[in-house]
Image (cartoon, rainbow, N blue to C red; front, side, top):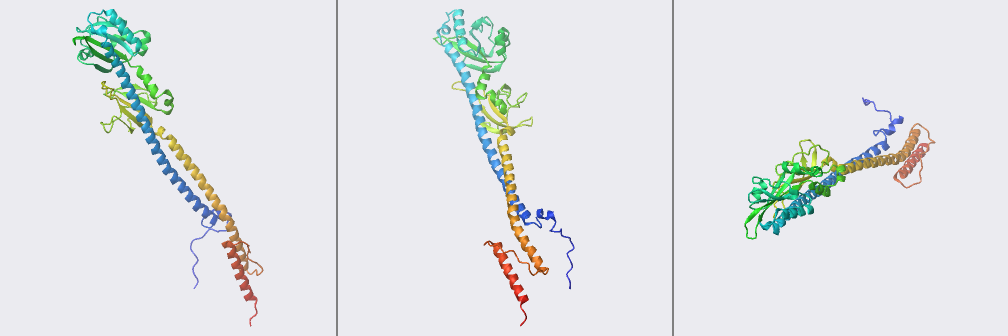
Length: 394
């Protein structure tokens, strides 16, 4: 009984394009297998190595940003302490510890202190009645300051106050000083006689623009190209200073620190603007007897920008890997094509013999490879069959 022919029609393997069809072509199949395997391995290796690299870059930058934020916090605390300490030293000098010194002598000492530290916008001495008796440039002399916080709280112990406006002082500044004027820090210390009697309060308003110089020493303008920005937040989250390096018109809100006990660290920050930042932070903790204002200093960079070199390398690795996979596929295709040419020669000779061409001989290679030995064995088999066919019957 005859078998029914297969119902599906197979494409003709002798068409010119069949050499590129893995169903019929061994070179195409080898190229697909080896090239595909190389491509899959290259993509996997690029993704794995890229992931490791991104995490390594994130850890490194997190440490760097945390260090920059801490350096800014430390420098701010030390600078404020230095002004605070200079005010304490001035309060301990003779012209303030004696009630018989003239206002002119005290003013000369205060102006010498201001000349030595230009961050002091104003220094004044108020007596026990709350009236300014001596001040730099004579500004606000005779003014009643008995209800000012720096005077009230500075009578008992050294006092520091965070940034605020001082309208009375701003009106007295020269045009050159007005360019610097914005907000001021208040510092004050009690002035006591040798006997311990309170003689008054020595207070100062400190310019804030020096903080910009500190910021530039930590995060210079060159870092703006990398979109790295530094922001100083007050204890209530208000912006005190911003370098503007990250391209925003207004910095985002102060980040929420997951562990409030941490005074420094780094984290990936999701902001209300939709941008994700890699953020290093540090809190002001003061210096020596100055306890600090609890400011929060952050150093930020968009996460995409921070990881851009790692992602670019990952893309390059993927491209190089796919290129290598293409080379592997082509190498496999050409190597297998040479083999299939010899197999096609054997198949062509076999078909001629099958058709009755008794003079056709199989290829007789001289090598010792498997295909060479197979050709010789097939040729020997065909010759044996021919001899048996041509041998007369006994």
